Amino acid sequence: MKKRFMALLFSAALVATVLTGCGEKNVVVERETTETNEQVVSEQVPEAEKQESTNSTETETEENIPVTVRVGGLKGATTLGLLPLMEKATQGSTDIDYEFTMVTVADEMAAKLMKSEVDIALIPANLASVLYNKTEGGISVIDINTLGVLYMVSADNSISSPKDLMGKTIYLTGKGTTPDYVLQYILKENNISDKVTLEYKSEATEVAALLEADSTGTAIGLLPQPFVTVACAQNERLSIVMDMNEEWNKAAGDGGGSLVTGVTVVRNDFLNEHRAMVDAFITEHMESVKAVNEDVDNAAALAVKAGIIPKEPIAKKAIPKCNITCITGNEMKEALSGYLKVLYAMDAGSVGGQLPDEDFYY
Image (cartoon, rainbow, N blue to C red; front, side, top):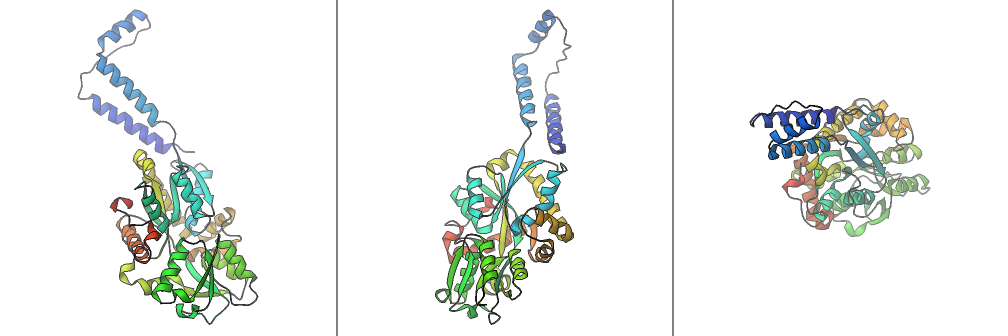
């Protein structure tokens, strides 16, 4: 693993030490091999300068302790943009050391953040707000990694708008997750919340399997990419009957921000101690996302290797529809804050009881 990043930090520490010393009395000491000469030298150096030298040595030693950035992601679209970076890390060609973890359930990644088992995590956008409030400002969002990836899938081609869902049962992943809140908001804005039954499954793979096995042609599932493409490939009768991105824009209007699926957050304890490393991660994340979008064939191979998508042909179809991105700064804040405001107006609990403060946005 390359140590260019830590070498830069070490060089910076040395420069800072030199600059600090320029304003003080210079003491030139030539070390001798005898105890007598060493004692004389020690007596010539003031106690304060000896203490400063000791502290400087301790600081330099601490700064050179290798730091591994622990990054966690979910097994789905939000992690696709990380795959080239993960591959580079296994080859030892990244600027800093990484340890990657991938789980299937957002709650599991939330627990890892709360226990400080990961430093950076890619999680659902509303969960980031919930954790910010739960930790009293203990995390910050550093980028948006995925925009809208939700689609309604069914073999029932009579469905083309929210109104067509009346009297139907929709299968989706866990209550309180992004798909749940997005769907509930759209149903509410179309005044049909009490006319649709929602049945929750723990993982998107369960919803996809249910749709694949449906022999009646009436099952409806709300799925994110790449599971949409997987389900449609496994059951040719299935198709996308509703794009939730379009329905969100219709319901939310200009002030509703963007339909944000996933964001990347960092523990502020880690950020405060290793800000330069977090900035380096953001840069490498951007490069990784660019690599995915520019070379879909390679990204598809990596997605299969990581176990996110089962086959490369499916991955090649799904990845361009996953809206993989890396949005930072003011653009990130505008898109995410608008999205969270819509959720807050619908259900304050969806964002943790209150909207995050300004320091939520890095």
